[in-house]
Image 1 (cartoon, rainbow over the protein chains, first blue to last red):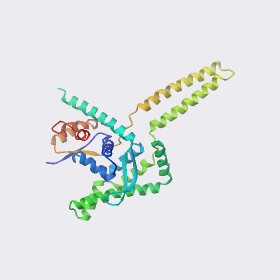
Image 2: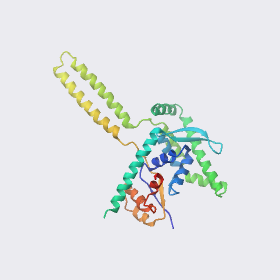
Image 3: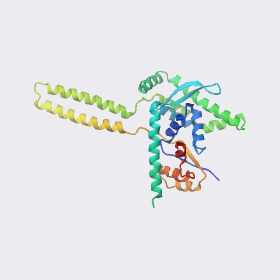
Image 4: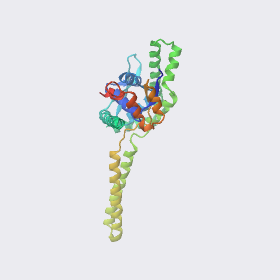
Length: 110
Length: 187
């Protein structure tokens, strides 16, 4: 059966990045891998677009970065969640739940 | 604290654009190398693996430029700048009002200045409050795709607006407990 694809709501990528980083520091490639992993490969990201997302979140102070050595002994930029980022993630989770709940309620209305 | 760090990083990006560009490029190349290695591990030939890695990455130069531009963007949201501007105006208006009150012939001019100051102060207060309560989490585009086998989704997509795309997630992606992929991640 063929697979179809659709974009999600604006801001979803940022929220997913925050969620992935809430589980520990990662480099950009790792963030993409983790999102795919925790969504059971259901959510796929256009890999390059992760980086503007990461830079945007860093500019907002929700994540911070530093260069370090990766598992394969190469220098890589690792990102981690800041305290503000953690708070923002909680807020976004609540917003998402509200939105999903309201949408489901509307769909189930007879 | 982050504002100080962000300002330093912003100034650094402005002073050393080439260094920032090199760093961004190194970071993006690392990603492609990792993807290439993973592709080889999954059985692809090196040349195929590299090509596939580049394809799945997307437009390298666009993303590089975008990252460099974000680094050179002011580290404050426009709402913060707007607030700062209104506070400055409020302070200046307050100062002007004080000056007007202390003028020798302040009967008419003083009252006029005080009225202007009150209006500006009230306006600053309203805008300031709105700026504080403005939701700041706004991704500029959605680059996440939801992958599904459900053919109904394709049909739905035809008449759903962008805003209602969550609808397709809600319908097509729920598991046996009725949770969407994102809900599964959070619960």
